[in-house]
Image (tube, rainbow, N blue to C red; front, side):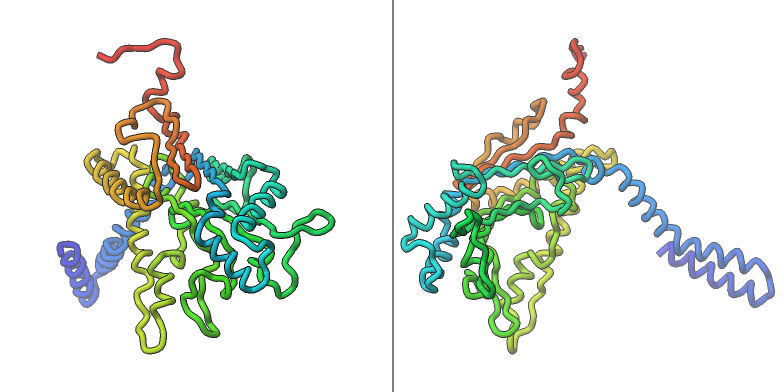
Length: 360
């Protein structure tokens, strides 16, 4: 109210001086304009100055490794459903489910030269450069895909889908991706006929093209990995409320608010930025501790639902050097580490010197 009253007074004084032919009205006009833009300029300056020093965005050093077992993936109900539909349509390369699973494992080993049925993908983010399995990935997304063929040509090459043939009838896609902060392991690529869920039929059909085997709530570990926000791959259309809106909207129905989950996600991203920037002197310990506990509360039900177990507890954050964090379930293991946590620790001076000084 004080700022508003000040502006009204300036405007009234300027009008009065102008009506009296007093040139001081110009000063009133300048003061009024400055009052209008001053606080906005201050806010913009604050944001720009902070962006030059936000470590997780410009000086990232994050490690993410996902190792998963294809034999367990092929036992998922979504893969069973694919086989059932292929068999019904006369497109199955084998006649029984065990034979189908065995064929997928055999063809994975043949194509990717790994006989143990395990896939390991390493993501490293260094100074906003993404490395996948040791090579720079200019796709710039935390993503890794496998394409497992059902059949081979006489030349020993994977058989490609014929014209007008659905991709799922020639090969199975398995992919790892990070979207909206969730690390997903999925199988697919479904046409509508093979989709496990059709959200809306008709000429403008909407249907699932991939089925999620398991997911890991990477977002809610924030500073433990320090992955830059851009690599969390924020996509409004990938939120549950947006997806559900396709199924709930139809004739005679009002479209629901599809952005409910997106707004909630933006609040989590704001918390994520603060926790990744927790060494900022503008924050206090109680605020950081409250936000960390809120994230722990959010991630625990998701870990339980995914059947994840971990090799660390909440009392081991003091250890140096930080050896990373590992979680696993029946499908595989997720490992992540914030390499900057060691580099910027006050304990570094004792790690790289050849003497130790006792604190008083």
